[in-house]
Each structure stands twice: as C-alpha cells, then as structure tokens.
Amino acid sequence: LGNRDFPFVFGGDGASFAIPPEAAATARHALAATAAWVRDELDLSLRVALVPVRAVRENGLDVQVARFGSSANVSYAMFSGGGLAWAEQAMKRGEFAVPPANPGERPDLSGLSCRFAEIPATRGLILSLVVVAGGKADAFRALIAEITALVERSPDVSRPVPPGGPPLRWPPAGLELEARATRNAGDALWLRRAVLYAVTATAWLILRFGIKVGGFVPQKYINELVENSDFRKYDDALRMVLDCTPAFADALERRLAAAASAGVARYGVHRQRSAMLTCFAPSPMRSDHIHFVDGADGGYALAASALKGARG
Image (cartoon, rainbow, N blue to C red; front, side, top):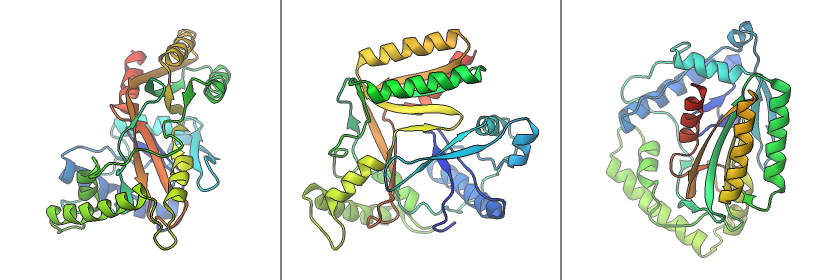
C-alpha cells in the first residue's frame, strides 16, 4: 500500500491488521506471497486469512480500533470488540483462508531486519504475558487497568529496551533470516549474505562509534528506537514484555491466577533471560521506524501456548 497507513498489531506468534475493502486484492496477493515465501525459504506453514468485518458483526462481535502513541514519532493500533479473537479462531478452523502463492512468489519485505543482539534482563527476568477475557467484561477491563497501573508505578519493572538501546554485535545473529527475507527472486543467497555482511559492518561501525553520516545522527536514531519500541499492546488480549524482578513476576501471576479462578480472565506467561527486537525501518532518515519486542526464548508464542493449556 505504499506509504498509506493502516492499523496493525504484532502478536509475537502472529499479526493482525485492518484494511479498507478497496485494498483487499492487494492484501490478498501480499499475504499469499508471504505464505509462499515462508513455505519455500523456511520450510514452515503460515496460516493466513482475510476476514470481512461483515462476518464478524454477523456473529455479534465488532472490530474497534484505537491508537496508542508510544512516542511523538509512532502510534500503534489497539483492537477491541472481540472481532480479532473470533477471526483468529475462524482462521484456525480453515475459514476465509488465503492459499499460498506459486513457488517463487516473494513478498516485499524490504526494511525488515533483526540486527541487534539479544537484550539481557537487568532486573532478573524477561516476562512475556498474554491476558484474555474470561467472560466478565467490566471486571476484565478493571483487571487490565489494574495491571497497567501496576506496571507503570512499580520500581521493580521496566521496558525491556534500556535507555542506551539494545546491545550491538557483529555479525548480527539474524543476518541469515534477513538475507532470506530481503533477497530478490532469482538472486543467489550467498550474494545477498555477502552484501549484508558489508552493510551490517558499516552500520555497526556508525552506531558503535557515533559517526554522523549526512543527516543521519546515530544517537538520535537510538533514542527514537527506545521510544518507538512496542512492548505492550492490546488486540482483544493484553500483551506485554516486561523486564522485572522474580518477586514482581510472582506477585503478578498470583493476581492473574485469582482473576482466572474468578472467571474474569485467562492468561499465559513465559519467563526468559533476555528479550529480542524485530525492526521495520524502511529509511534510517525517518523517525517513524518501529521495533517489535518479544522474549528471546519463546516469548509470546510460549505464553500463548500456556494460555491454551489453561483453557482446558
């Protein structure tokens, strides 16, 4: 869609977004190409669906969208109304499926990278958290407000990305994935790797030593990266990645267990030693580059698995 803005949420083990009807054909093609790329390059199966909002509303739910400004540079979408959760379950049942494109079809993944090293916990552990409603809407909203306020006030918890930015290493651990994601159809993988080795080495030197290049100011970019990092979100579920003490994590889990016993919510958590960033920066000269935070050892995916287990 070029530079056209649209709401989306990165959920760690998946992503959701909303588009206008006139963009449906473009989105379908992009989704089919992405599923083909995942199949061909990574030997994985990616479930994809394009769900009409009409179908959601016919089932008594809705898709409501709000914006959360994490900084002056970017805002992230948040979804409520139950529609996204319903759409995800419909997708898992095979409804509204978008089949993968033909072999060799590739999506445009330019700007996508994972060049920073894992971010070690500074307070004891990285906690990935997923909380969904258990059926009591008012009580659930109160619980979410309580958890959010607790995270904001407590000295025992902070965002995972430190003020000085994530650690820098070269070569980056995600170089192979970036090579597979950004090479053009027909290009040799070894050639794309070689180009990225050179590009990432240059970027490492610029950021490591704070070298200004034209209008690019490394410290400004790092400051924006910290502010633009997406470590909390809502898409019919509260999702957070927190750097916290074990005592804080224990207390939070006790509160969530009590809420689950009362039928207010279901939850899943996963503890790990570090966090990781996936970055989308089409241009280093712009301030709206975005950075998705997840736990580095399973993160949201394992928290979601724990949630599914709790359902039974």
